[in-house]
Image 1 (tube, rainbow, N blue to C red):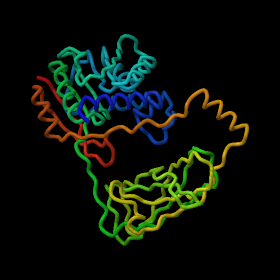
Image 2 (cartoon, rainbow, N blue to C red):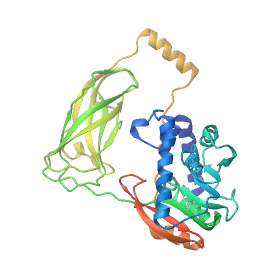
Image 3 (cartoon, rainbow, N blue to C red):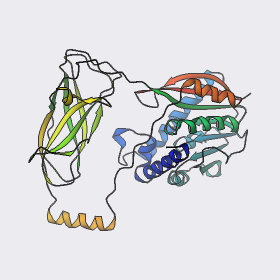
Image 4 (cartoon, rainbow, N blue to C red):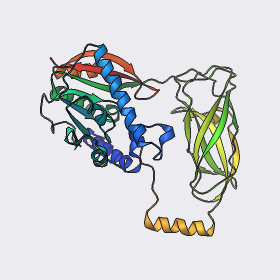
Length: 370
């Protein structure tokens, strides 16, 4: 996929998430998925993040003017609104029309905050030397690498002399492989689910014990997941359903408690809920000889009144599917620093960050313009 098509696909995905679950799409706390973010708490988290980055600037003796700032990838304005406490004029830019529409709705600072839609691979909507401060976090990593590099060069172009741009960018995927012959686990479902409605979501508690005799190191791409099988013939009804990551590794003989979020099949019937461990992009443990665990679950059709209600809902609105996941990309540190140098700016400092997630190496760059 070329960069133009990749950017178009990114626009489509973010627009779908903006309509489905905008706050969680911006700040993906697992406990807040499904519209569970409190709006006040969500915006207060932006104030915490901006206070933190301003303190980071002061610690580095970086003191940009407070006339105008840019929030790149503003979403619904979580950080833009917080910036407005310090800067005279704040601009937010986002690839999603729905996000920008919501940002304007939630704006508490009138004309001091302006929001813009930008689906272009540049920031030509802004003049050169316009911003004293530019901030972007948990955004560039979702862009195609060449687009991210281009936006970094654009930050430098629109940064005012004496200004500072601060942005986070993932560099590379950092994943350790499980040692050979260590794919052995004992799994126990400790909170069985006996019956569910079609498509219903539920939580299942699972205890996983490393019985391989070999330590699983932290940093492996290890998860617990589940499949659904028909109890009639053992056929797989759903190959992959829930996932819960095991980030911290697990010593030989030790156990860990996990909570797996599952979704029942849409077709009523009797199923086996099979739970196993998986080394992502390598193998399910069962394929290497380990024994998964399973419980029987009945997926029951709704009663007649509920069925009538569901039919009415389906006539009014088609069933919604969760949008596609966000893409993740990396740009090596030397490539970022070269882009900054080409754009005639300087990297004042670099610090490691984990904004891309546990398995990604990433950095926060502090860029200045003489």
